[in-house]
Amino acid sequence: MAHSVTSILTRFRSIGLGLALVAALGASTTSCKKDSAPEVDQDAVANVKLANSSTLGTYMTDASGNTLYIFARDVDGTNNCTSATCMPLWPVYYEANIKVPKALKAEDFGTKTTTDGRQQTTYKGWPLYYYAPGTTGVNTREAPGATGGNGIGGVWHVLNPEYGVLLASKTVVDKTTQASSTKTFLTDVNGRTLYYFAKDNTSPSTLPTNCTGGCAAIWPALYMGKPTVPSTLVASKFTTITRDGNREQLVYNGHPLYYYAGDAATRGKVEGHNLNDSGDYWFVADPAR
Image 1 (tube, rainbow, N blue to C red):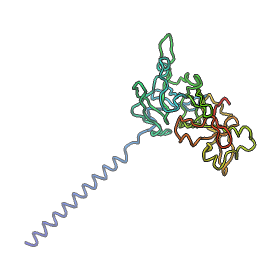
Image 2: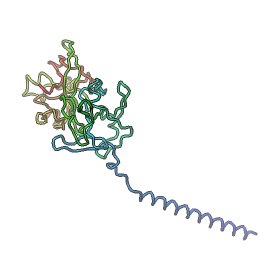
Image 3: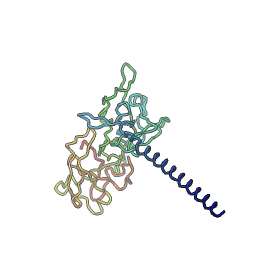
Image 4: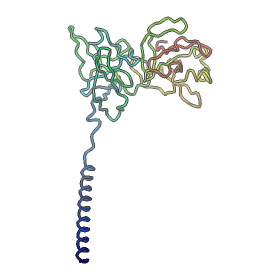
């Protein structure tokens, strides 16, 4: 009887080992199938693309090669192309499920709703558009590869993901007179306002030390090498100075560029224009000056 029980147990052990071996082989086969699956070509499936121009450099398009644009008046992150003439000329771009090529980051894209309820894709907070010029009273979107909207009014530009400095245009309050006027000025790629310091004009030989200590805490320097910029800015006017332990501060047309702490790193905010602070006046970085 004992021998019979032992025989049965041995048989069960053999069956168990066999089942385990079959399971292991199955798992191994599945693993091999997974390992051998072809990788997805991220660039091939992307529905936002990058194109190149000998004059404009790299710029963004939709999946069909239609050029995408940004509008300087959207610096706050809101679509300001709302007039009856602007909307048909600059249709919004919207893609519900953005798939980016390897050179771009999906987290840089977002979606906003316009004041009239349309969905619009954004890049680093900037709403994106097509260009559709009018012909005999009918607006027709430009052909793939065309960049005819670039530079229009000095406020429309192709979107190069390598831009380091951009243009903004909005109503600004003069902090000395409290008067409001429309200003065009420089921002970083995230729409943060850049400023000039009047003292840098009167003391050009001491640019690296004109705003240090408490001044630098309120008016931080823009540390950046020479940037890629929209075509309506003169790239050769961007230079740098060395300050604060061999760091490069960006300069435009002889003016070192600064942020203002009072803007709280908020895109489109302009609280420092013609403000008398740290011994002299500060102004938005007007590229015409």
